[in-house]
Image (cartoon, rainbow, N blue to C red; front, top):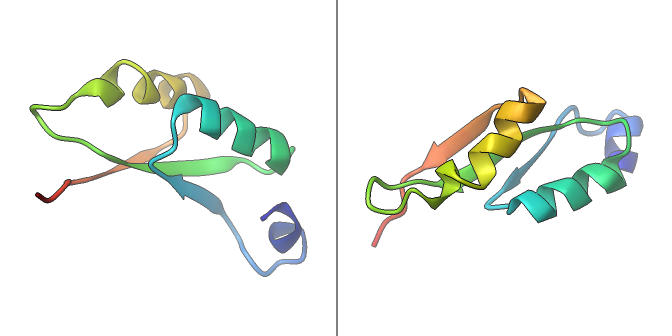
Length: 71
């Protein structure tokens, strides 16, 4: 992905359903190119992302997108 950004073929890099560890690994491979978003599932009866994923994005001042998980 970093090469695609450097070549101008992709403007931004985002991920979906990444754990904090995967986000950190992705950022490592992107180098100075910022990881701009993470699309995560969020439900009122499953709020685990509030404890692990959201604090990482708050710390990095990076947006996240929430998608509703369908049954």
